[in-house]
Length: 195
Image (tube, rainbow, N blue to C red; front, side):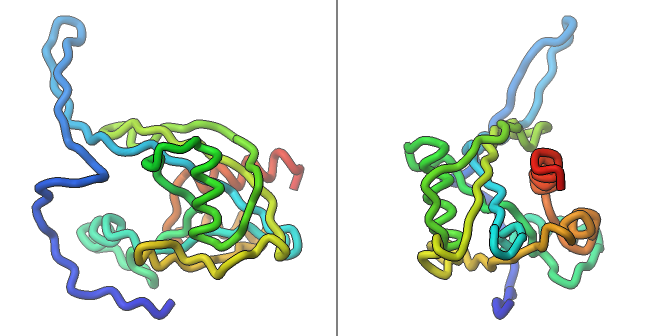
């Protein structure tokens, strides 16, 4: 990856288009409690299987929050702050989940898919967010490639192919930062297709 990350600074957040902090007050068994939360957009993600390569297509990108937390914990990785993820996007455009993921696939990885199979709806950041993510699956091949991908608005996304026969090793490689949803998607694939 040719991208160079530098001059990182921690700033106070005054306003955001993506998150809104709030506090919930509630009573449980007669005791008043409070919980700090963050409202975030729901999202979609997709496991992409490339037929000719017999590989999963993932995206790799720099995530500042991951960098910050690893650095704060004193942990070091070869690719500090970079994550391996399913192609994904926020539900912030006023279109359906399926339309959103089809658009994200074109933007992030450069493939034109016509349809996607819904796998499951999960909820993340349970301690403070609780937003939902709808996970999809699609098969791709080279005839569907329409661009180099990489995202929009400076996302700087790198495409990474993980050979299906090496995916289990990748799952347990702790030097590659990934979310639990990616691991679930791989397991779903192995179970569904008896791989």
